[in-house]
Structures are given as C-alpha cells and as structure tokens.
Length: 342
Image 1 (spheres, rainbow, N blue to C red):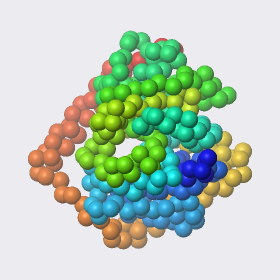
Image 2 (image 1 turned 180 degrees about the vertical axis):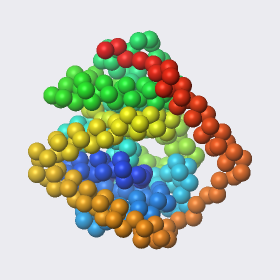
Image 3 (image 1 turned 90 degrees about the horizontal axis):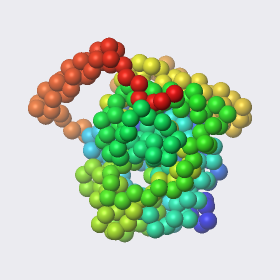
Image 4 (image 1 turned 135 degrees about the horizontal axis):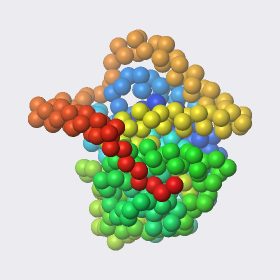
C-alpha cells in the first residue's frame, strides 16, 4: 500500500529465463501488495514455473488470458480488462526487465501519485529508444552521431549491435558503485508519440473509465492513441532507472555476447549480501532446477489455451525473415559498428 492506494504489479508472461531476475525485487518490495502474472504463453515449462512460484508466494496471482487464446503480443490487450480497481496503482513490467534500482517501486509509485495528470508514467529505461534519446540530449550518453526520437528507430530500437554496446556500457560503467545515479535527469513529458512500454504505471480508476478495453496493439493504443483522445501527456521519470534486455531484433546478438548471464552474475552477487533477496533468489533457482529435472514430464501436460494457427503466407514471411537474419548475422560479424563514444 502507498497513501491508501493498493499497488499491483503485473507482467505479460512470459519467459522464465528472464523472469528469474524480475521476481526477487518484486516479491521483496514492501509496497507491492500483489503481483499479477498474466499467463500469455503456451510453453508448458514456463507455465509450470509460474504455478510453482505462486504456490510458494501468496503475493503472486496467476491471471489467465480472458479469451482463452494465446497469440503472442496480439493477445496481451485482453488482460487490461482486469486492471480497473479504483483504489489501485498498476505497475506493468516487461518480462525481460533484468535490473531495477533499489527502491524502484517506492520511487515510481510516489511519482505516479505526485503527478496524477499524466496518463502513463515510465521510468528511465536502459534499452528503450526514447529513453536513449533522453540520455543522448541530456549529455548522459555520448553517441558518435545524433539519433532522433523514434520508438522504432533503426539503431536505438532495432540494432542488436547497438543493444550489445549499450548494455556493455551500462554493466561496466554505471552499475559499479551505483554510478547509474549520475544518469538521473528529471521528468520528461511526451505527447502524441509512441514509446515502448517496457514499464508503465497507471491508475486503476483511469483504466476503469474506458473499461480496460484496449483494441489492437496495446503499445500504440496506450502510449499514443488513448492519451491523445483524452488530451493528456505521458511522462518519463528520469530519476528512476531500470534495464530492459531486448527487443526481438536484438535478442540473438545479446545472447551471443552473454549479456543476460552478465546481469545474472551481477544480481546473484548483489543479492547474496541481502538475506531476504538471497532467500527469494535461491527459491527461484531451485524451482528452475526442478523444472529442468522434470521437463519431459511437464511438456506432456496439456496447456489450457487455444492457439492461433499461422497462415501459410505468414509462414513464408517468417522463413524469409530467418534468411534475412542469417545474412545480417554475417554482416554483423564482418562489419561490427561502434555507436557510443567511450
């Protein structure tokens, strides 16, 4: 609770390989009353992981897709209908948020309450195109050439090479000694501009006003269409920092460079010094081990969802994309670029 508001965190889940790093700080937070895990996957092992974690922690509430259909990001929008409690503040976190600063929830919920006129508020997100733009223009991150403010920027959003360099910069120069605090840059309102909603906060009463009905692409609707309809702005709180792992076009590059493992090593080391965090981390790792040990049995368990078949035309498109990705992989190896000024 915070100032008579119930604090509900939620995540469209998801992938356990990432959420092993998201669960401990959420479960340890003193102000998060409930953690809604939106089950938006047909991976039986991921679902089993969430079930076993929910058995161990009463804060976890499993929310099943309201329409009984899972279709990747296209089926996320239905979950917002469950986020309309008038006395609640909702904190949505992507499943691949791999680090958040201590006291993140206290900071962001306080900011949400102190700025009720914004539609959405977001922290400063490492690996989010508009947040990278903020870091660029405030002089916190020096790039070799100017990159403009676009949610789907060909470098800041799409480039795997840039994401590798950005995370490497953050891990090496900002996390040690809590130097990430030097990135703080105040509030930055934004309007009529889409941004990646890696972490957003809203009032339940605001969502209730339109029944939580989010048609189509939830990111376009919530970051751009709905606030424009209402004549409202969104806002980045540049004094609270998290790190988001990857967009789909970046993931292969980051995996090849072991970026996720580097975050894991850092977090396990940090959490080992805090008994509560270590206990939660140890529990998460134990459950992950259980899942791997019983994988063959678990994958035979029926998943309670209908899936949407992939049309033939889309299958050919996916094959083409895989071919293009192979070419890009070789191009990346041969022509690796540097974007950040050391």
